[in-house]
Image (cartoon, rainbow, N blue to C red):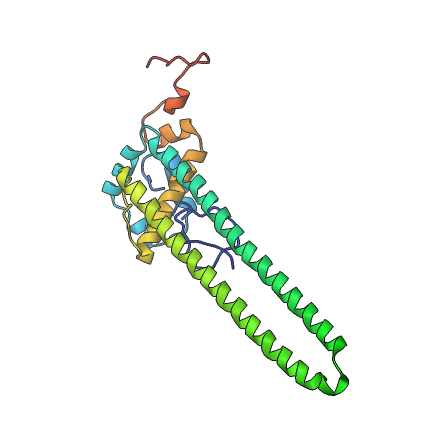
Length: 229
């Protein structure tokens, strides 16, 4: 059990059911500055790069101008962390319950065998084996049900991520389950996050606007008063 997630964001290491990579973790402003070009070159040379039109790049650049998209992506990442932690804890609790169940059954069988007359032992052991197999089957089914629940929840969260970014006007994002489109969206988000990590100044330069970029929160002096443009 391990990655996750149909997340668009490739970020966490929780032990969750293995499936296609997921949105937030899965940045496309090539040609808009050195920062974007560097991030673009660092990605693997796939069809992703060939599918990015100039229009998509321009629309994405416009969406990043005021820093709101960076804040939205960060919020989605935080929600993803909370969701993964919750799902991981749910599965961990189920595993602990199964461990306790197995221990209790093993103890029960040992005590029964110790109290059993020798000539009845084969019959007892056969019954215990049938009980053990029934319990293991139950455990297996409960684990499968939990994994299906996790996958469905992750699918819903991916759709939420896609919808949120589409409503924010981020080019290339809409609700889809197409693997190629998911990979494209993941790579777009990866580049957005790389730009964010480079800092506000690099983000501004990447958009070709010149001068250090500041988020709305940073456009205040130390006393909390807005800094005039």
